[in-house]
Image 1 (cartoon, one colour):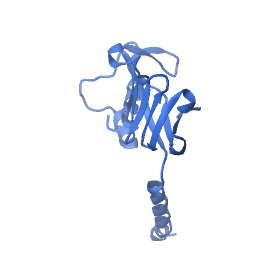
Image 2 (cartoon, helix red, strand yellow):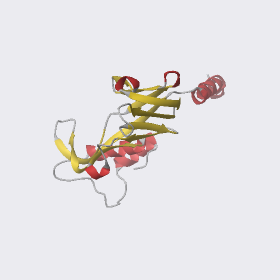
Image 3 (cartoon, rainbow, N blue to C red):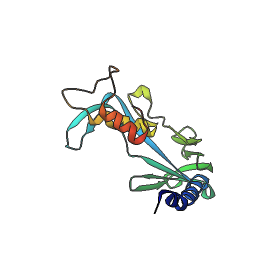
Image 4 (cartoon, one colour):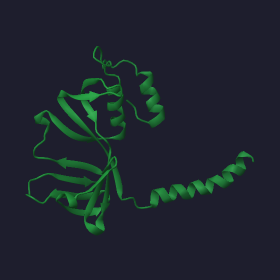
Length: 179
């Protein structure tokens, strides 16, 4: 089969698949939470060694809005929970715009998504406390993971602005994330 014949068959199929992916409504948004610790968070590598890291990635979370039930379902790894089952009241406009707040009081913990950006308000956690959770981009999550994979007791990766490492360049070519 020649190249033109292959594209003659695959071209329309690929076009339909892309159109369905772009046009179909998606109720889920995946976010990348990280923990920031001013005194250093304990980071355990795959060999079981413990190091201090300024930021560590937490498992990704997928938020699925259910406007019909005015609820949001959260999946973290294999754990699936519902905000309404956890004592929250939710107002859901669509997958990328919703707000859920604890029923207990008007100033309690709240989650909100606006245009796909998640924010989390917790009165017991703030940057001034030294430890807090924040939500970052896919590329930044890779940067944090790559940085932490290079940690050891004797040396830390250089931050003096020198040329990017081979690992950084490979990551850029694989994911489009410039570190």
